[in-house]
Length: 185
Image (tube, rainbow, N blue to C red; front, side):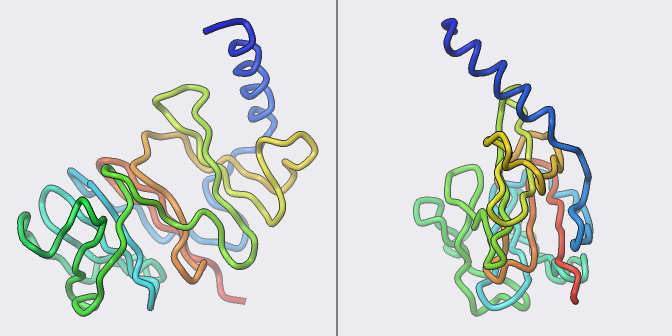
């Protein structure tokens, strides 16, 4: 690492250290953390607050609003999954839906919602990442624009992001998925 890179890393660490930590942002509730051994990908339904979880032990569906597992199968191989297309057939209440995936082989979930809230990550202590939740038009990386940002967690993420409606967000590791739901006004 050259001197410029060392200075930039030190600046980033100092900048991010100003952001308060809070496990759940105001206006949201943590609806659960679910153990999923061998988690590879996740994907949100485009029609509901249901999350499809794909692992080395099959597929499951989590209702993000209720914080409950609502379906499970243990089939680990089939034409229901395409790693190259990042698509998976749903099960249970998602059985008629093709779910876009994000995780170990790529893809991505929405990083902001229609309210303007966003999720940002940084890895000054790589391979561990820090996850930040930000109010509209705020950023953990810009001095003076950090008010309204919260440090949520540090972990080894597979992926993180919002549902398509923006009323749920998750972060997933190789062993679990943590789910948040927007409080109803």
